[in-house]
Image 1 (tube, rainbow, N blue to C red):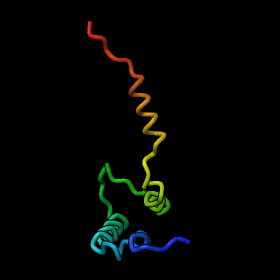
Image 2: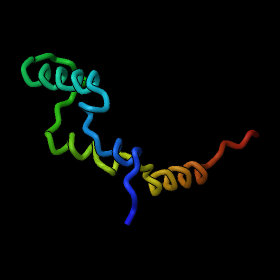
Image 3: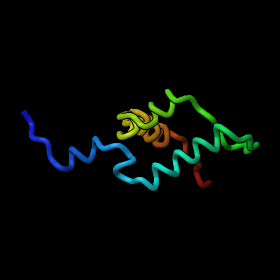
Image 4: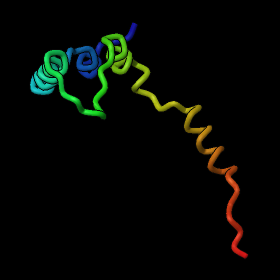
Length: 83
């Protein structure tokens, strides 16, 4: 059985207790998006499920397969010969 450390405890704390100012800013922005209409082309609204997934364990790791694929693709690109 593993011992719970202070670092592990911090990982499980909600944002309100870790950084109340950022939590407040996020609430204010969510309220602004939900109650106002602003035509900003680069602004996208997503569902709560998408927001939850974005903050999940999947966002804490580098997609290794994608990195390897990109590296392979770049390495196999033809180079210009200087004639």
